[in-house]
Picture 1: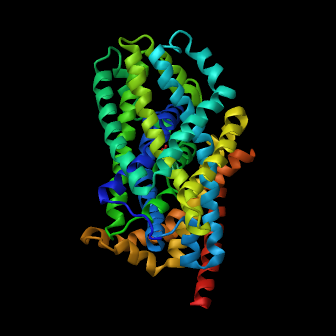
Picture 2: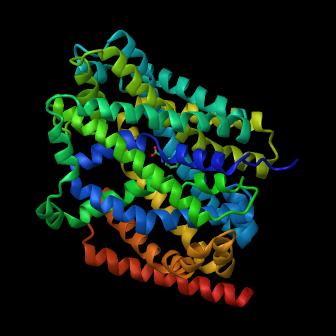
Picture 3: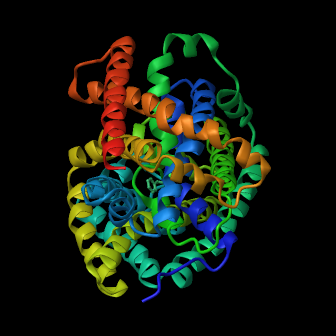
Length: 466
Ligand code: PHE
């Protein structure tokens, strides 16, 4: 059986943008921005996207296109059987992310429907508290999952590519329209100020905690570390520049993220809601509650949550595809069977997260950041010290002049600098979870020892087998 491929380059780019743009941009980003000092967070986040996110994304795609396999098969093919474990990390990361993601997807679906009837307008806080976890939440999660299964079931080109080619432009148009409309509301000015003006003192006093939060969010929003972009790149038929594609994908994702911020913050300010309120529920309580006071409140609610639903769905399918590709490639299952099996798995794990707020919090808050960081760290060390020259060749394939010039700097970034950074944020994050705060110098020292040790081992290993 020949392996599926994207029909067009645009189709691939839109599918990847669909993966990147999602709840990360709309639900997680405003919430983190609000609790990390507004523009201070935005600034570090943009820096991390450019310096870590884009080269990391390309590093992940290099492995997919070179091997044309799912993550587990890719590492086995390129590095030998014992590297399958790195693919296993990607599978685990995918399970962690989609298990809570589809619960939030269920909330969004419910709010889209509830907007039409205005069900949450009168008492937003009570409404959210009544539906966030429990049997109802599990039910809506299952519906969201079913929609995800339907697209993945239909295949790479006829399902994913077709769906995202319609969804992504739709997201841009609808958000663009909302942003313009929001600007006309009285009192929205404070939102732009909060979002776009920098508080230098805040940044100075909280530099490391803001940096760690920004780094986790940058990986999450670009969908790197879980093998989703690796898998999508494995369906590339023609060889065009991955560096160019990666840059376009990250630029569009960031643009749409900022656009979402330009809708959400001015709206919150115009309605007199403080953006930090309510943590993960902020979108559903602060923002949704405020919809009730607007003209055309039901239309606004349906349009807003409808766009978010599209964005969430186009991300969820990319995560599910990781596991489906694995079962199809490695266990010779048919796509329908693989999709059904994976859907069944998430029915169980997602239901557990929908019933247990503490499990949900663990997955969404801490584990997701940690597994994505660990995954990307492994991928990049693999590029740098197992693939080596082949990684650079893959980077340069189809590349124009500019991408050729950036090849070497990219290689050293991916082989040494970014792994150090990822190990640093991983250790800091792990310390925070374990309740043993690791100071910045200690985390840096540990990162240098860990990454340095790994590089020494990998070098002697490949030297002796080469
Ligand atoms: N990037 C997606 C979002 O922002 C989430 C995601 C993470 C998707 C990891 C795939 C892999 O919503």
